[in-house]
Length: 634
Image: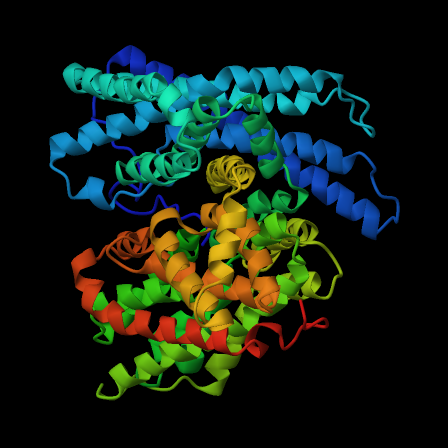
C-alpha cells in the first residue's frame, strides 16, 4: 500500500488541501520563497543520496574496498531528505489524508475542514518544536564513529524540517481570504486543546480508557475531519504522553527519529525515483506494448494485459498512483476503441492496484521488514506467488465478463511479437533483475535500487533514446515529496506504536487475539477484516507500523509463519485501500483514468470479491507464501 500520490490529473490530488485562488501578493511571494527553500535542497539531497550509495556499491563490488563512512553520510542525508521532503509535500498538499467525508460536505464546510486540517497540523508542530530542538541538542555529545562529527548534524534535521513545515502551514493558512472562517478554525482547535488541558486531572485517573480517548476518539475524529494522518497520529501521541503520563515529550521525538532512520528505509526514495525514471524513459510503455502484441487478439485480451503489466511494473515506483499512471494511458485508448466501458476499465485498474500489493520491491514489504525484523529477501520471495493467485482470480472475472464479446482484433504475427519483445527486453529485464538480486542475497534492496537507477538512465540514453533531462529536476522534487510524506507517517506511527506498547495495550491485545474462537483460523479471519478496515482508513504503511510489532508475535505464537501473515495483512489492506466508498486508491484510479467514481462502483464489486477469495486462499494455504523459501518455517 504504497502512498498514493499523483499530479497527472486535471483536478486536485486525492487528499490535497484546497487553497482558494488569488492569495495576497506577499503571501504568494512567501510561498514561492518557501518552495525554493525546500524543493531545491530536497532535490539535491536525493541526487546526493544516489551518488553516495552508488559510490559505496561500486567500491564494495568492483574494487572490494568498502567506504566505511558511506552509511553514516547516507543516514545524515536521509533524515534531512525526509524532513525537507515532508515540508515540500505539505506545501503541495501531498500528505495523505482521508477525504471521504470532506468531499461530500458543502463548499463552505469543506473550506472549514481544510482550515481545521492546517491549524491542527500547525498545533502539533508548535507542540513538538521544543522537544525536537531539545532532542537535537542532546545529540551534540554523540560522535559518529566513521565521520568523527557530532550526531547533531543529523538530528538537527528534525527541528529544521518541522519549522519549515510550520512556515508552510502559516502561509497556507494566510492564503485563505475568509478571515471569519479562519478564526473559527483556530478557535475550534484552541478550544479542543484547552479543554483537554483543563481535563488533565480527570484524564490521569482514567487509566487505559485514555487509549480509547486519544488513539480511537481523537485520532478517529482528526482523520474523519481530513487532518493528514501523520499529524493526527502526532497530535494524539503527544496529547496522551503530555496529559496522562509523566514521560518526557522529548522521548516521542526520539521514537520518531528511530522510526525514520532505519537503514532498510534508505531504499524508499531510490525506488520512488526509479519508478519515475521508468516512465520518463518509456520503459513501462515498451513492456505494455509487448504484452498487448501477445494477448491483444483474444477476447478481453487488453484486460489481461492490464493485469500482467501492473504485475511487472508494480512496486518499483513506491507509488500505486505512479504504477497506474504508467500503464493506464498506454492501454485505455485502445481498450475504449475495442468497446470497453469506462466503468469496467477503472474498476479493473483499481483492482490490479490491490492485486499487486505484495509484488516486490514493495515499500510495504520493506516497511514490514523494518518494524518486525523479517528478512526482506524472504518477503520478496513470499510476495510473488500471492500476486499471481490474485491475478488468476481477476482473470477469471475478466474471462466471465468477456465471454459474450464479439470477435477480437486481428492476431499479431510472430514477427510483430518478436519485434516488440526485442524493444521491451531491456525494460522487462529490470524488475526481474531487481527481485532476483535481493532474493538471491546478491545485494540489498538499497543497493539494487541504486543500480536500477543507473541502469534506467543508461537504457534511456542509449537504447530507448527517450530521456528528457528537463523532467529530471521535477522528478527529484517529486521523489523527495513522496518519500518525505511516507517517512513522516512512519515516524509519527512509530511514536504512537511505542506509546501503545508502553501502556500495556500490546499485552491486552495479545490476550484477546489468542483467545478468539476458531484458534488460528479465527485469528486470520479477524486479521483480514481488521486490515481491510485499516487499509480503507489509514493505508498500509501507518497501519503496519502501528500494529505490526503487536500482531506478528501473536501470529507466530499461533503457528502462522511470519511471511504468510505478512502476505495476508498486505492483501487485506490492499482491498481496503482500493475499495469504494472510503478507499483512497479507488479515487486515485478514477482521477488517473478521468472517469467519474460512480461509473466504477458496480463493476468493481466482482473484482473485489475475487480479491477477497484470493486473500482467503492465501490465508488457508501457507505454501502459497512460503513454498519457495529456503527456510519455510519463517
